[in-house]
Image 1 (cartoon, rainbow, N blue to C red):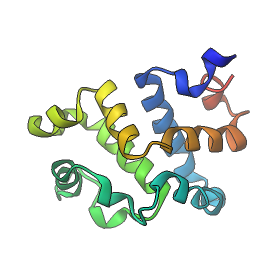
Image 2 (cartoon, rainbow, N blue to C red):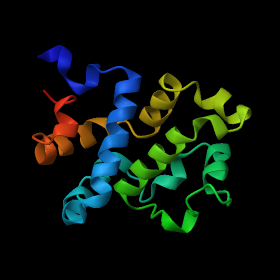
Image 3 (cartoon, rainbow, N blue to C red):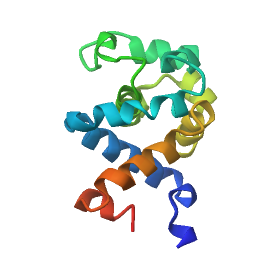
Length: 145
């Protein structure tokens, strides 16, 4: 049982879980207030999540082009928007300039480590939230046995 705990998952499984959690939370607006109560745990004293990023990665995230989510759609005070940004960057990791990937590391290990170092309580907070609210849903059964 202990070995199945989310903290023992490999980086790829953790990244896929965050992606699936982001997708699920994005459509379930009834739980957004509940999720909002978790933001202080994850942001660790910061009011907004944008202040903690590598400047190069943040500039990459916020650049405007036809393939990107416009920066004004992210609310930097929202955990679900942090998850969406992670999901989007994960999906477009290969577009991140080399000088940035050298600093944040390879995908998925470096990517996981980068976000874990910035938001040490992100993964465990999200996994607990998903476990409380969605454990019986098929898409999460493979993660949360």
